[in-house]
Length: 248
Ligand code: GDP
Ligand code: MG
Image (cartoon, rainbow, N blue to C red; front, side, top):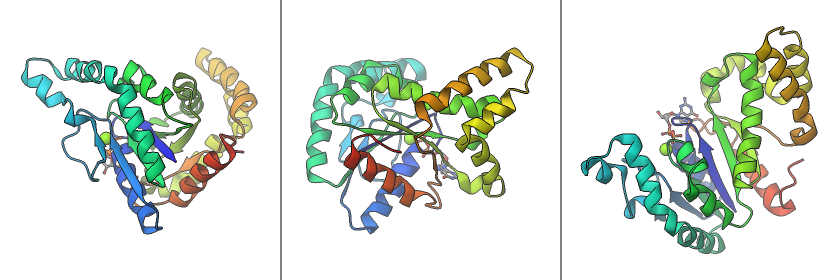
């Protein structure tokens, strides 16, 4: 089973890769770890595949590029090798129960660069977990946005994508509030309908359409630090591979 963690910088991809991997190992599974981040300095897991063996952001910055230019250049360098990486990962999938893929800190380096799409299209049924942080859920539009964004990732990478709210340990008391809007799209729509602004109308229209396409996709509530939700994540991964994408 291949699980790919995607999310904005700081959403917890690297921490979750390490901690969920440890959890699976304790359960008796063998786990392979893949690092696709050319900019990371140190990792809390030992990678079986590490793109930094080919190129790092640090090396490129030493040759005069700024941080953004160096990130883009690093993936330009990796792109011709995307298929080789996919083959290596696929081989590991045969040997290991789980392959956990930690993606670049900056999500756009993976989503909007050929390296990411070329790699993903050469993997067999990878499951993507889209991590988002409670801090981005400031108003009701944001709840609609994150559910839509998971769908956009699904389309962009042609891979089943599960949205996951990470860092629930920092919102303990408000978790039920977050769940009320994230889990119940009808309720969210009914609240958005009351908003008279243009954005309110847009969010309402988008949100009303969501149940047609994603109502059956489960949302995960995780804490990479405390391990909350790991059992659910394991179940979702298992169901994905045993039912080939049906996560109802
Ligand atoms: P990445 O950029 O997505 O790989 O994010 P990291 O895994 O490097 O995490 C960024 C920061 O968020 C680090 O300081 C982590 O310790 C912290 N972090 C990650 N997951 C959690 C979590 O579940 N709860 C809390 N409280 N902090 C977390
Ligand atoms: Mg990271």
